[in-house]
Length: 403
Image (cartoon, rainbow, N blue to C red; front, side):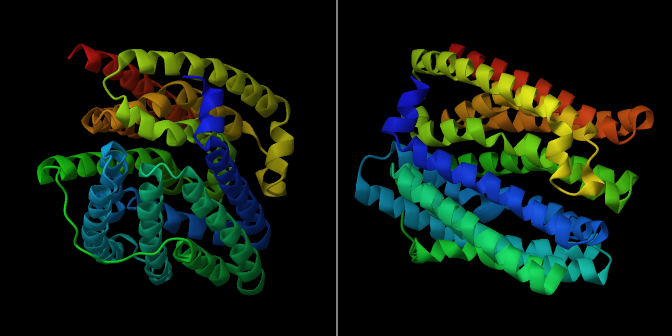
C-alpha cells in the first residue's frame, strides 16, 4: 500500500488538511491564552481541562467506535443506517449518565468552588464532543472522508475565532465559554435524530468492542495527562503551565501518522486478516516516518529556543520540549501504527493491556525519577513508558496472526 495513494485516492488530503489546521489552531489558541492570561490563570484552566480529559475518551461509552468499525464492514446502506441510529441512541443516554457522574465526582475531587464551577461549565463541552465523535465516525465508516474532515476544519476555525474574541474581552471566563461552545459547530454540518434503530451484530460483541476501545483510549489519555497531574501535585501551578506548553508541539506533531491511520482505517478493517496487506503497508509507512522523524529531530534541536519563545518570555527554556520530542518519535514508529492496527482487527483487549502497562510504568518511574531529575524526570518517564508499551503493541500485533 503506497502512502501517496492514501492521500490521493482516499481523500487523505482532506483529512490531512483538517488535522493540520486542528494542530495549528491549538497552537494559535495556546499562544493567545499564554499572552492574554497569567501563568496562574492559565495553569488553573489547564488543570480543569486535564480533569475533563480523563472522561473524554469515554464519550457515549465508546458507542461511536462501534459505528466506525462495524459500519466499515457493513455493505448494506440501510443496515448501516440502522447501526448508526442504534449507536447514537444508546450513546446519547450513556453520555447523559457520564456527564452527571463526572460532575458529581468533581464535588469530591475538586475542593475549591472556583474549580467546580469551571468544571460544571466545561461539562457542556463534554457533551458537544460526543456529538462530534458520533458524526465523524458515521462519515468515516461510510467512506466520506471529505465530510469527516469538514467537521474538524469548522471546529478549528470556530475555536480560534471564539477564543480570540472572548478571551480578549472576558479573560478567563471568555476562554471557558469559547471551549464550551466550539464543539456545537457540528450541528451546522450533521443532523442528529434520536431513534432507537437495531443491529444484526450480537449485542455482546458490539458493546464489548466499544467498552474495550473506550477504556483503552481513556487509559492512553491518562498517559498523556497524568504527567501534568504529577507536575501539579509535586511542583507549582507555574510548572504545570510550562510543562503543558512544552509538550504542545511534541505531542501535536503526532497528527502526521494519525492522518494516515484515520484515512486508511476502513481498509484496515476490511483487510483485517490479510497479513501481507499489513506488511506491505508498514514497509511504506516506516519509510515515510523515518524521513519525518529526521526532520522533526533536526528542527527541534536547532530551533528549540526560537520555537518555545513563541509562547512568551516565561516559556523560553527548551529542556522539557527537547526531551519529549523523543517520545513523539517513538510514537511515530510503534504506539500509533500498531495501536490502530490492533483496533482495526478487533483486538482492543491487547491495546488495553499495553495501555495499562504504559500507565503503570509512567506513574512508578515518574515518582522515582523526579527525585533525581526534578521536572525532567517526569518527561523521561513519559519516553520510557510510551516506548516500551509501543514495542509491546508491535509484538502482540504480529503474534495475533499466529493465533
